[in-house]
Structure formats: structure tokens, C-alpha cells
Length: 128
Length: 209
Image 1 (cartoon, rainbow over the protein chains, first blue to last red):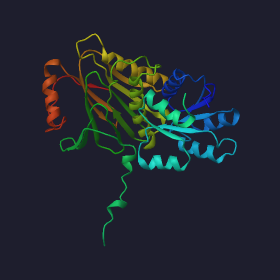
Image 2 (image 1 turned 90 degrees about the vertical axis):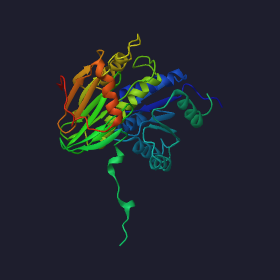
Image 3 (image 1 turned 60 degrees about the horizontal axis):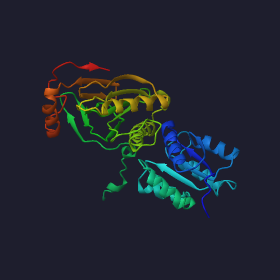
């Protein structure tokens, strides 16, 4: 089944510059509906208020980190099905293992390029 | 009883990244940490001095004065990059360099709303029309504005390289512009790592920030 380019994507990062970059890359890839949050708490509020099909989140944020956001999403019956991709500088094996145990769908290590983003998204949502 | 060295956990590695070299300078009593392009360092203890030489590269000196935690990075946007809002590799590289430093300081106990930021470098030191230094300077200004981080002092652009000594404990920066004729000599001395920067009498004009 082809990927619906109208899917709603929530991007989460505490650096506004990074949000702009990720949004710009996603639009370049053809995605149209992108919303943003600046930490896990704000992301959860948005997730409860709106419907999203994919979450791309940073790891290191305050007050709620990306890994805690992931755990909240997986523990919530209405949200747990949403694919979550972490985009982070946390490249240590223990962090990747922790993210996998928490149910992450994929993992992008910063600094990343557009090709990596497309490859990882394809692995999660299918070819587009 | 057998020692168990594996039980010693160096918490610092959580937020401390790469740097060129580190040595103790007995003259000033400071641990001197040298940074090169791509490096960043978070200082959480007193009596450390972060040293670097900037051509077209930029360094940000970021500090939470209340928590007493500061750090510095040293980066260059590779190649030709579009504007800050663009999605070029170059911009992402710069954001990564800033994010690594700032997140490191936050992890060590700093708070974003207390950060003071000093920025240096971005000299157009190579005689060509690319003005790489100015592009790096434009990036750092735009990034900090976008993130709502205030620049408390800066010395950017111009056509001379700079030597920066940053004291995270106090936030003081000693900057010296390097005249072209002595560039090679200083670069050579840097490469040798035989003497500390501070143990050597510093000639010329030094600006404090």
C-alpha cells in the first residue's frame, strides 16, 4: 500500500532551528501535514488533542525527554500504535538498546542527512 | 581483595565530548584543554581553561553562571550552505555542534534560561570571495536569535584569526587577534604541543570579554 503523503506527522525538538530543518526536509520529501512540539509534555498534549500518524522526536529535552515520551505513548492505549522515530545525538549502544526496549520503531543519529531520513522513514512507514 | 575497576563510572563521559589535548599548567594552576574543529568540551570543575585558535571557524562559549557550568565548541560549517532555514548539510552540522554543547551543559545541571553566550571567530582569513567566515558568523547569530539565546559578547568576522582562552569558572574570555606574519609560527607551536599557551609570555594586545 502506498504511503499516504497526507499523514499527520508530529516533530518534537527543543531547538527551534532543528524543528525548522526537519520540517523543511519532510516537506521536501512530500509530506504535507507537519505539526511540532518543543518537549515531550507538549507533544503528549498535542497527541491527546489531535490525531497523528507518525512521531519524530529528539531525545534530550526538558522537562520530558524523547525516551519518556516514547514510554508514555506506548503505555497509552489510544496512542500506542503510532510509530515513533528518535532523532538524537545519543549514539551509545546502551541508549539505542533502551530505546528499542521502550518500543522505538527506528533511530536516527545526528548529524543526519536527507538520505538517512528517507531510508529510516521508509523502513517504518513503507516506500514513498 | 581484588579491585573492581569496572565499578568506577565516569559520569563526565555523559556530557563531555572530544577535545584535542589536555595538560596541567603549573604556572597558572589551570588544566588547559585544547579544542580543534569539531570538538566541544563541558567544564564542571574549577581551574580549567579552554583554548582554541579560530580562523574562519566559530566558537561559542556557553555558561550557566548560577550552576557554575560552562563549555565551548569549535566548528566550521562545511562547504556552501543555504540559509539557516534551509535544509543543507552545513546548517545541520552547525546545529549539531551547538546542540551538543548546550545539551551537555543542561545535562550537567545548567538551565537554558540562565545561559550566557559569547561567540568568536568567523574571520575571513582566506583570500577568496567565498567569505566562509562571514557565513559561519551569520549562522551562529541566526541560530542564537532563533533559539532565544542572548549573546553577551562577541567578536566575529574581520580578516584575522583569533586565539581564544576561555575560563568557564568565571566566564572570562581572553582573546588575541593573530597578525598574519605570526600565524604560521603559532600554528606550528600548536602542533607541537610542547608548551602551554599560558606559560608562554603573551605578547601583543589582549581583549577581555
